[in-house]
Amino acid sequence: MTVTAYTLAVVLNLFCVFLGYQFLFQPASAATGYGVPARPDGDAGAYLSIKGLRDGTFGLVGLALLFFVGARAEAWFMLAVAIVPLFDTLIVLRHGGTKATAFGIHFATAVVVLISAALLFLV
Image (tube, rainbow, N blue to C red; front, side, top):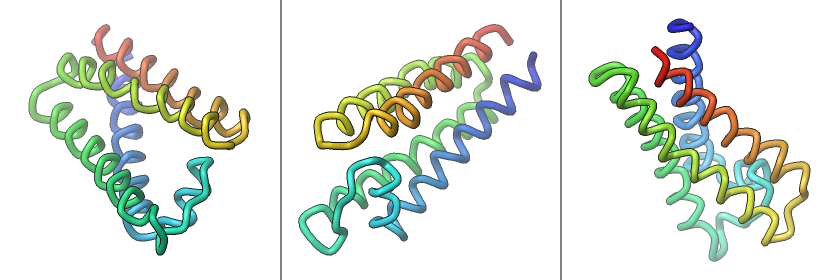
């Protein structure tokens, strides 16, 4: 179970780093994948960059906690961070995104993050 807990945590954190990179360097396609398309050359440009920085930072902080502090600190971090994809679900729904994207991507991500937190608490 320890290997599974650590592997899932590392994968989730690296995915956040990837999402951050994507929102910083490919914002239009990243926004479409998020479920609410936006034009990075319009009013949304700054917000897409902020999202990229937020996601990338979450991934780096998560990796640092896991490797330098331990599984329990990472579990608490994952538990707190799970609120982000839960609210992403609501944001997509409020702004005309599909239910499939809202629940299939964002809500599912929240569930996986909570599973990761639970596994890390058990380590």
